[in-house]
Structure formats: C-alpha cells, structure tokens
Length: 289
Figure 1: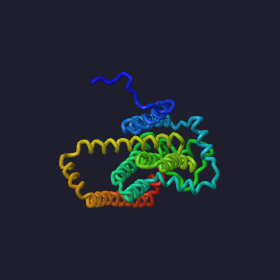
Figure 2: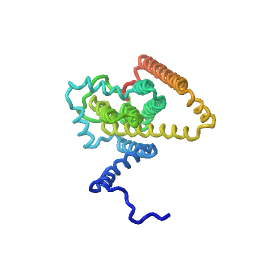
Figure 3: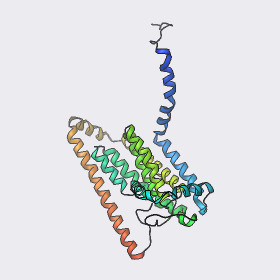
Figure 4: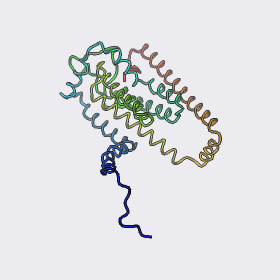
C-alpha cells in the first residue's frame, strides 16, 4: 500500500520542534563522542605525550611560568581549604571513592574507581622517572612552597591524574548537580598542587590526561569482559533475576572484600615507605604526587 504523498506529521507551533532538535543535536552528539572510551583514551594519550615532550629538558616557557606565578602567588589564607581539596587526588581517594560507590550499591563503579585511581597513581610514578622534570622550586625563581616540601620529581602530577580518573568514572552516574560539583572539584585539585608549589601547569595537564586515558582503558576492559563473558554468566544472571536481593548481597560482599584488600595493601605500602624513609631519608612520599 502506497503512502499518500501529502501525508505529514501534525504541525508543531511555528515549526519550533525541528529548530529545537537542530539546536540540541550538536551538544548531544559531542557528549556521545566524548562518552566513547576509545575517544577518551586517544585524547588522553595524545595530550600526555605532547605535555611530556614540552616538559623535557627542564625548560619552562614564559606562559607556563606566568600561569604558575599567578596561582602560586595567591594569598596564604586559602591554604587550608586548598589542602582539603588537594586530598581528593591523593592515593587514598581511590578506595574512599570506591567505598562511597559501595554505599550507593554500585559495585561496578567501585571496581572502576579502584582500578582507575590505583593504576593512575602507579603509572604516574613510572612517567616521572621517564621524563625526570624537577619540582618548581628548582625551575622557577621565587616559587613559594606551602606545607610539607614535595619530594621527588615534578612531571606529571599524580594528584591531578587520580582526581581526573575518579571524576571521569563517576560523571556518567551523577545527576546535574553532582556533575557540576565534579567538574568544579577535579580542576581545583590540580590548581591546588600549583598553589602549594608542588607542580607546574604542564605537570597538571599531563596528570589529568593520564588519568582520563587510564580510566578509559579500564572502561574498555570492562566492556570487553561483558561482551566475552562465558555462557555460565548468563545462567547465573538468570538465577539472580529470580532472587535479586540475595544476588545483590553477594555482589556487594565481593566488592567489599576487594575494597578492604586494596585498603590493606595501600596501608602496607604506606608503612613500608615510611620505614624506608626513616632509615635512608630518601625516596618519594606517598602524599606528594
């Protein structure tokens, strides 16, 4: 049966619906593209490589030095709130955020935060040894150091990387208010590291790029595991659908055990590094990334 040639949808007032779709089409497509972990992985890797190349040779450009002095020269009265924000990018922020996800009964997000945050911190130590850029106090005259002196190398910032990884993992799960808070807090973690004199702006950009790339890699691994799950997983899911409460309890218990194990491992590493620091007075401190 042929469609009548004059068949049209009911008219909307002044044709506002097509115009509205045209206006909202671009932002939605852009968000969809950025939501692809392959895109985030590529962008993060490219930005990290570019910033690493610019940070080599102990060179600090005029623009980077100017930006550092502006942030580093802020008044001392904001040190305490800056210190609190800075802890959201510390190594302990990953298990803490995973614990919050567990309280919200989101085991998948908890595993993603643990893997992304912990892997970003570990890889940041490796990148530091490869690039070997000193701290700002060595490269910029008049740099002000607040709080405990930052030990080790400068590029890249582990704090900025952990914050970016946790924020990228949590962003799809948050509402509009939560997203606004996350988008505000994550950059402030990096800016606080510049404020205390621990990092230069390129260190922050490279750390954030590493965190986004690592989180995207974790997301891809999770997707691969879901696609290639064995047939027994399907049967277990059907059994879980018959008793969702007991399945949810078992799932949360398993994720909780992983979280506790990671916390214990982090505490053991912290105690070991503290003993080594006391005996040799050398080595990086866990809180200085």
